[in-house]
Length: 614
Ligand code: CUK
Ligand code: CA
Image 1 (cartoon, protein in one colour):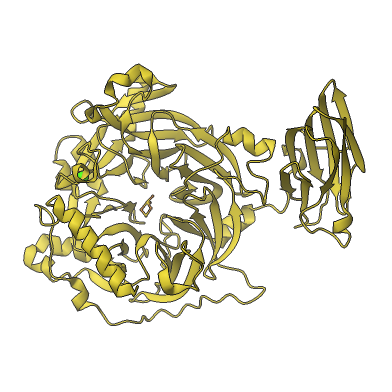
Image 2: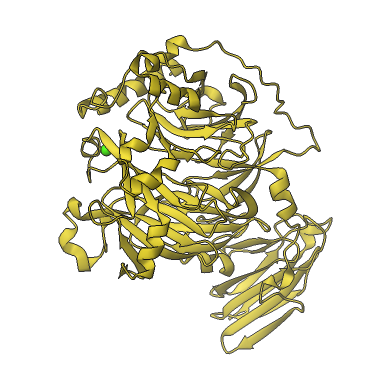
């Protein structure tokens, strides 16, 4: 199908669904003339080169979520080369994640996940290069990745929620808290003790959960009537916020689309801390649950926004929250300095809104170039729309006539096709540098050679240094990044180690040997290419075996793989790293343990026998 046809189809379906609920023309939703007719001509004045020659390094570390692959990826920007994968909520036989004892301890039996939002830890409004945090929408968890090893080092289960979605770390003064939202409302608690409410959606609630970044434990949850979709924190450490598209408490699409307005909900951290200190919470499934429901508390502020909003992003100067309308073709600009007065009751919540410019059909997410411009992804139109924040605010002041001319629109870039998140380099920090933009497009269709029914996603790179957005590169990606951040290399690279500290692992092996206590056998083994520390190990059928291996090779990049034939065991260990597995020797016979990760001219000879005697 041609792109035109697909876009039309998408537009039609959208209008049908939206129209059925009587929405698009509803109050508060403008439909000015299609701005695309006034589209500035193609081509930009940016001059950046995306090509990175052999031996040259990228300027940015891109951290991509992997969607329902459950992982996080490292992509070099601007080359868009996928450099590494960090397993998080998935099983990854390449590294042994989900197979080793160390990873199983974190996964606790759940080696599937759905990562959407990956963000870095902050100090004073910019990345400190210490941690990444990522949500698991499937099993309602938050994981932390330590950047020095680029490995997941903690996973916290979040109780009382489903659809753990928007996630954002505290930006100022540093990341002590991380917030995560529940996109799906559920009964609270959601178990047999509350069975009377299973069929009563009016008693389903959303949660804005606060997690302690250091301890990776739930600090508290703020319960609201609405669902909590995307998340953001301000640059002052005072507020976090979420968009909500289901203020209706609907359980069907048309119910969720019934109202003309939903909300941007703002959470007041000072009041949350006071409420916690005053014991104003109920403990439910181990979490302190505060009441943030409408009319029940002063912890929350609801700013009405049209209609089923999606992304909320904060401008790098910390002044504005930009909230995308999704079903409304507008974005809503909220001035954050007005929140204090709104919480104090001096102004109405809607008085925090300073502009509501037209963007296009299906605005989803916004990013920033650090020069006063915002760029918004528009799903139905398949465009990235660059617009000027000050001009939008100015036109709003001047009134409807000024607004109709759409003076805020700077450029409209066609993308291929159906964009979700977009992100500019450093855009979620006060150091937004307006160099590159990545458009994470959901549908690649005819953009690559045909690989069957499941096509890759298409990540498009644009040079945004000029007035116009200049699309320069396409890059296919495996299932299914939703969001990414791009961090300057000088922030990350000095923090990343070439080898782990050997004794970070309490079981690091310095001397190979076998210990037996009844049926419990511990095999301790070194690996040093091309030799395992043992030539053979004899077991009895039924032994419960723990194999611990430490890689003693000090050469950078020299990893050893440890695989046990027919025992479904396979993991890799980097220099000085230790990993372990536990299994039952239930099959008698001779089984070769071999190195999977090519390590030496005698790599193929790097193997030993596991003899399981009857
Ligand atoms: S969501 Cu996927 S495109 Cu999970 Cu951030 Cu908007
Ligand atoms: Ca709604």
